Length: 168
Image (tube, rainbow, N blue to C red; front, side, top):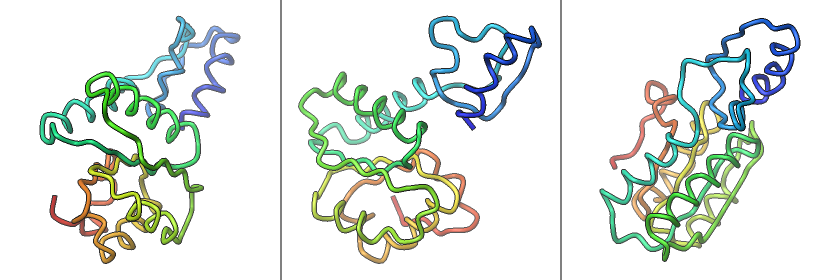
């Protein structure tokens, strides 16, 4: 995870041991030239979440409101901040009407779904994944959340084989 990579990078530098981490997307890993001996072959959160904002605005240029539901740890908060900054840069009048950060391992998302439905956003952005995303999709779909708002699931492919995603 990103937290593990952030903890290991200084150890790799101290040991002067080249180290490769494959599953740490945090942009913080290589900020200010901090990498040194730590490398990763994958991208990072900044271009990934800016790309979602660009794609979304190409598909739906008239959006006025967005909501965010991301996991409550660094990856979720980083993604929310990057996505919001990109949206504000590309479309300054976009309003964030809800920001929700449920704890990882949450089994019941009914409160969050109610808050999202009540805020009536044009778009809901999420980088939840795994079991959290599965539970969210299974609970949100019957309540019509996917038909009332465009939902952008940044890591939706993680559940495609186990959870039927609604159209759109």
